[in-house]
Amino acid sequence: MKYLSIVTVVFFLFSCSSTGSKSHPGWGTNLEDGIQKAASDNKYVFALFTGSDWCPPCKKLEADVLENEQFKKLAGEKFVEVVFDFPRKPENQLSAEQATYNNNTAQKYFIEGFPTVIIFDKNGNELKRWVGYMPTALETTLGEYQSVLR
Image (cartoon, rainbow, N blue to C red; front, side, top):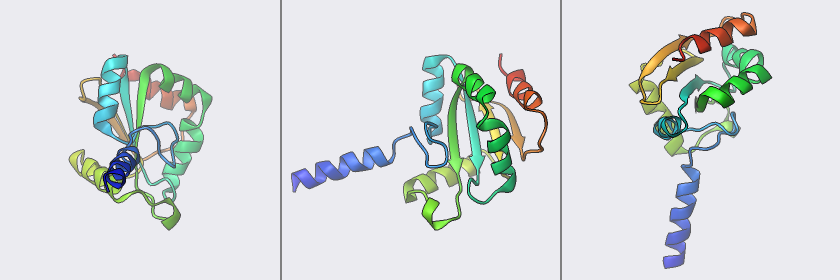
């Protein structure tokens, strides 16, 4: 019985891990952990609220910006990336714990549309947010993200 309890606890801890998302491999899924990592690494938090499997502007942001090597380079140097996904397809559903966490975080930060990008400083202060995505030149979007970095 003790063995089953230990296995259950270990499984729970791994399922709540903040390093990885089906839609964004390598991105964190917990804002508090992201802020803590940003503080220790002297970076900013790039938080993305998305509907990865149903939201056309979210998919366009992914294709135009987030999957681009220039963004990946910027992110590697300046950001801790955290994603809050709200998928609709059954095969993409999140764990109940992650879905609840994402919903609570979206309510806390008054998320009203997708995609929403928020950049936080290493202390967790919101610096700027963008709601929606209108395709522009990659350099313009990256310039907007860089403009809030102090």
